[in-house]
Image (cartoon, rainbow, N blue to C red; front, side, top):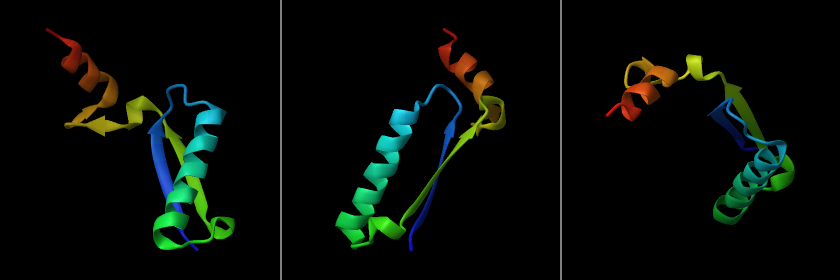
Length: 69
């Protein structure tokens, strides 16, 4: 019984996009590992950008620095 946890930043991921991700991940596990989609669990967690760190910085600050000339 596979369990997949996907974390993304809470920045406008739609219900339809989540459904596509869940279906796609379930399909990959079925095709590659032979896992039954009926017992495959996919959880998508949305994280506030301020709670996501990259390069030792909160994501908004990291993006600001990346965008600076």
